[in-house]
Length: 342
Ligand SMILES: [Ca+2]
Ligand SMILES: [Ca+2]
Image 1: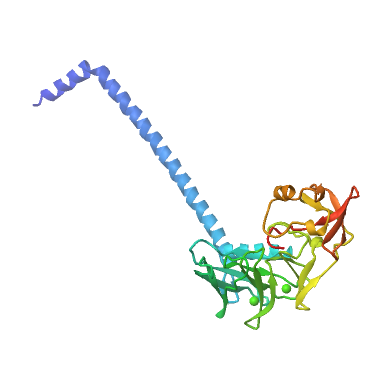
Image 2: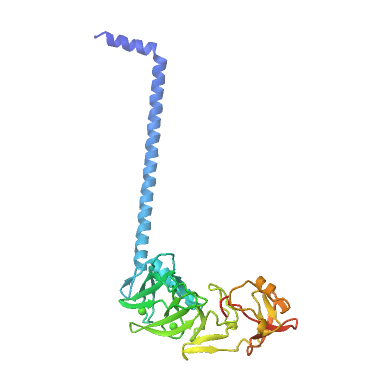
């Protein structure tokens, strides 16, 4: 045993020397590899440490921000989404337009909330709402009840059926008078174009009905006038800008009645659409919806001219229909723009 080991050792050293060298080289390479891996590990560790420190930094800067957003107003904790929506509502109301929520969704009761200062006490209120489906008198499934709750004060609004169905269709906010601190709440019954809008003011924790207008709310003057669908020469889209120079009638909140105005008479108006100028007032097609092309084909020999988009015209009189003159001197009658029943 005593001699075997040195012999073997010699044999190995002499006979297999190159491969030992190779092994040794490989070992040293492995050592290098290990050293490189260790350095890499340290780098990764440092990187991770940096990330942890950075994320802690972000968290610590984010934490107070969230707390700041969730401030209590009127005992409410407002989320950042609630805060953003308050700003959105404010923007819409500042433009004298209604902020509205479409309530109808096939076979589905709705629930949600709107935060705003309804009673003008300077504190944000929470209005929760729930809708309930039911059948209208035609057997259609519609929203036939909307329940509103502001701080435990409940308003149950039942569907008022009119010519054009669709149940309760919208819930929203409108600022009728910018000089008071109230922001009114409205519920639209039926279609925007032919339904009824009921407007409430939240005063001393009670809902006071202040107006009921035929046709959905399009805009306000901010001074007590409510502009509604059907009260204008023709309507602009619900989302677009409202053109108060086309108003023929409005609801006056102070007089509590519809007021007709001839403010449009004598004004030069640039048309935003194409329409027919008829030879006589009796020829004007109104009533059930038809396209302008259909009207043209139905109005043979009754047309003075087709007024094109961006052409200007002047309203001469409202006494007997809407009598106008065009830039090229043609005189005739217009109307039937509401695509509904007037
Ligand atoms: Ca309030
Ligand atoms: Ca107001």
